[in-house]
Length: 111
Length: 111
Image 1 (cartoon, chains in turn brown, orange):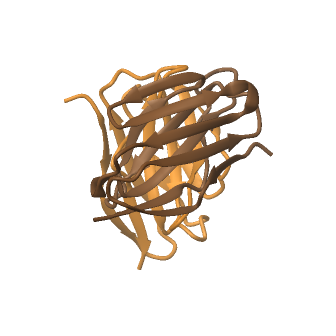
Image 2 (tube, chains in turn cyan, purple):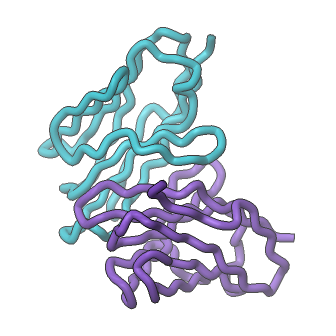
């Protein structure tokens, strides 16, 4: 079936380090989103990026749709960046059929 | 403030009971979604609705029911047929081909 795979599953870094999280998807996507889930369970939208590159402060994302992967870059990590990062894709042609989520990357930033 | 409101934040169910989780949005979004998250896992799609009075099953619809009588509201009922209902439930909404936005979730536990 349709799959979204994220790597690495766990990542522990020191404050100030840079990181790259990867998301592979198994089919052409209509929608690809990156989320950050904080310790309280809130799911925060980071990027809506079915293709191309976007930047928002210390975070940026790139999706190469033809090669079916997306990357999330976090620069100069802070302890508040800790949490779980999810990639999710919508494969439908209609653009409103629900997202398929990866299992997430659990990021811990140590002071 | 525009947003998605889920209530209650915590819910307890006795064996054999049905319980209903509320989801309301004032973003004028056409589509609404329900997801389930188990510990250490990504989200899985339960049901979604693209327009009022219409909804479709997602990947794990068994033991759940929904209604969409108003554009703003998409309640989820966890029935007694759902044998393992303990989970974190998240509601989302979106315009077609636009990013999904999530509520803060409801944690359901069995007494």
